[in-house]
Image (cartoon, rainbow, N blue to C red; front, side, top):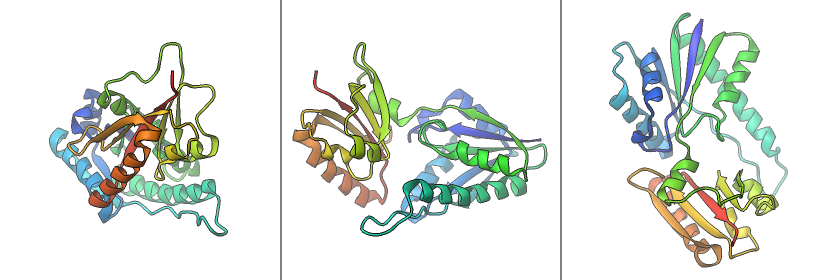
Length: 258
C-alpha cells in the first residue's frame, strides 16, 4: 500500500528540522512541493532549500504542484460564509492531492508533504487527506511527523514562557479575536492567521503584545509593548514588510495586565 508522510518542517528556519523530519524526507520516494504563486515563491524556495540540504536519498524526486487560490468573502455585499469558502477550497485541493497520490506514488511507494510548522496546528493538510481517503478511490496509510510551530518560535524569539504561573493560554485566530475579544478564561492568548491586526480592535489598550514575523529567519522582526503604545507601529511595520516581500507570516501573544 502507498504510504504518505506529513512532515512538519518548522516555522521558517531550516535549522528547525528535527532528526525525525530529516529521516522522513529520506524515506520518501517523492516529495510534494506546493507552489502558491509568484508572490509566495520564497515559501516554495525554502522547501527546495530544505530538500537540497537534508535529502541524501538518491532515488528521491520532487513534484511541484499549484495550490488553488481561496475565494475571499466580499465584505460589503452578499458572499458565501467563511466555512463555505474554505470547504470549497479544501475540496479543490483534495482533488489535486488525490491525483498526486495516484499518479506519482507507486503502489508500494512513499510520498511526503512538507508542512509549515506542525501539521496539527492551523494547517489543513490532514483534513484534506481525510477527504481523499473517504472518497475511496486511492488507498494509503498515513504517518505524521511533528514540527516546531510558530507558537514555539515566537516564545523563543521573545525569550519568554507562554504561560504565567497557574494561568492558561488560548490559541486562536484574528477572526475570533475580532468577534470575541480577549478570552475571559485565559490570561494569555496566542493569535495566528491575523491579516487585519485584530489586536487594535481590543478595548483594553493595556494588554501587552509580543509580535513576530518571519520567525527564525534572517528577516525576523519582533516588537513588544502595550497595545496602546505600539499597536499602530506594528500595523505599519507589518504592512511595509508585506509590501516589500510580497507575503508575510506573523503571529503574536497577548497578555492581560497583571
